[in-house]
Length: 330
Image (cartoon, rainbow, N blue to C red; front, side, top):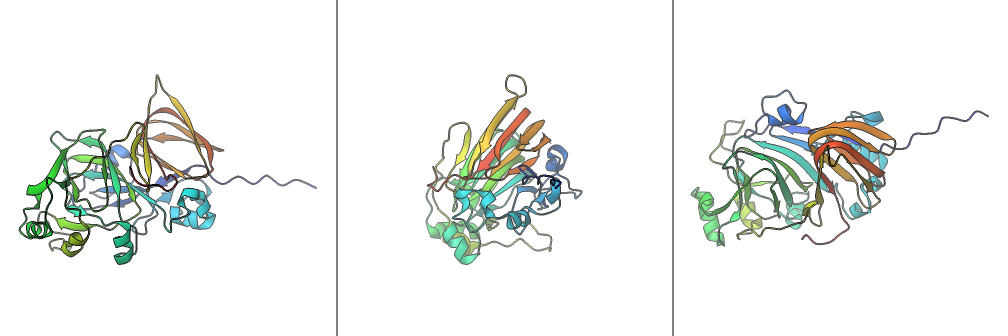
């Protein structure tokens, strides 16, 4: 009896193409510098790892090319997310590249309890890793001092909220951890990577009177903002290399290879979590299991849980995201 050809194992590396958002404050650097495939005039955000219905990532390689990441997970089963994700109803992480040519709105995101009750999706704790910043560029991050609810509402209505917001001047390589309930905004001239909970709930507090695509001033969400905002100065969280963020929702590590003194690194994707690798700069080759392919700046790779050993060879600056077993943020 002739033996049939051995079946190929499941893919160990899924290269992802992002969903793109053309918000009015965006620029075009993600197309020009990060190889985002988009022909429109404004590319504000690229959702490089997304299972969110507002913009899922699409698989770009192998037999599942053209399928969305959520479709792949539904077909293969949630086990490929790892044991740390068993407790979660939805895919845990949404990762974006963001190009702020102009100021983003002053905004706040709810926590899980509020968002699940009122919006039917997770709340949003997030972190930012600054990829580039013009001289003098800053973020708004919490308040300079504690505000009463009455003062908070009054300053929203009379457009003086920015007078009491905490300005954080940033440069390339800075990271900021933003808990749900923290008022914040990305300032113009900043390019960053954002790793967040899988949520698209934003309550806009102040928007500089801007006009939306419908010809009207963009909606504010004052009632919801009053419900969820922590009206306090921010408390910075410090982490040690390679961690740039480490909490119960996600862990993000930075990986750097200069291509000369360090040109190769390996790791293991075990059964506890998937691994997402976002290439911020450089070029080389990624391999895992039977899969291997080149990488370059802007590439996004999803490695399912239990994919075994992976290797990056070449030069790169990258962010690695995964989910630890349950524990509190730190």
